[in-house]
Image (tube, rainbow, N blue to C red):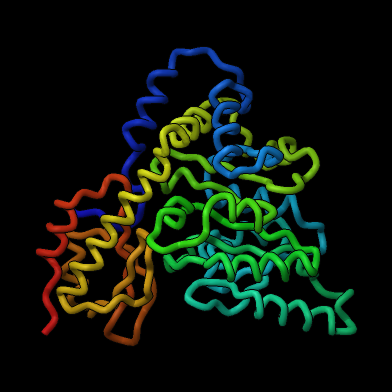
Amino acid sequence: MLYFTNDYSEGAHPKVLEALTVTNMEPLDGYGMDKYSLSAIEKIKKACQNDKAEVYFLTGGTQTNMVVISSLLDTFEGVIAADTGHISVHEAGAIEYHGHKVMPIPHHNGKLMAADVKAYLETFYGDANHDHMVFPGMAYISHPTEYGTLYTKEELTALSEVCHQYNLPLFLDGARLGYGLTANDTDVTLPVIAELTDVFYIGGTKVGALCGEAVVFTKKTPSHFVTRIKQHGALLAKGRLNGVQFDALFTDDLYLTIARHANKMAQKLLQGMVAKGYTPYIDSPTNQQFFIFENDVLNDLKEKVVYSFWERYGDSHTVIRLATSWATREEDIEALMKLIPTRG
């Protein structure tokens, strides 16, 4: 069976697993106060070119989104997001469960655009009854998006300006950030993200770690954030688990190396699919690739390939996602191509 369903089917990159094994018998302080966590924090700050940033480690993406958003919002505030955003669709109402409304806006290839956010805010504050409504308290985006697409520096700058005009924090979900940073022709770097957002996170779970996300507050951290993490049941006693992994990921550019490999494999996959006569559903420069298949072809394919259902495309077709990771080999791509029927 070939696995292209996601970028976290395998365990950890060997170098990350080695770091966990080598340090396994070493007694360390808990709750992220161990030397490896502190080292990882300094490495991340250096990579962001922001000495004043504050870094915290959590375990998973939904947990991270929920803790950050609930910590930043007041009780009467909600969060603006693209209608395809992860918090809008695939997090089981985690944000709403903690008392905050998700305010969806139509997406553009998965992206939230500054003009739409500004129009939304102008409409809200132009309503004489807005004091009786849920206030927009922050904006949420992901980079890459759910469709593997990327913001440009210009788009991110425009969003940042609108958010700050209305005093809204801009939060960037970086669950797959590595793939965005290493994509061809991108002008968005880690320092750019640190400059233009108020908080973002560097995803480890989907980029070579067993688990773990590194939250980076670039300007102002909510008061008592560690206490807020613990209130949400998200503070690991064995904080070393995340710290050791991120220390390894940010040593010798391992994080970017992992992501660059996955993107390279995704481009090889894309080229193979195009040669077979398939047109991408959306133009993604990252490790997530999307294609439209006839349902009867998928029925045969699913016996040998694990892929992700994405959305229906009429009565007889389906959009699927094929994702690559640090563990994807060229042989896997070649084996997949042998199973894909050529279109006439």
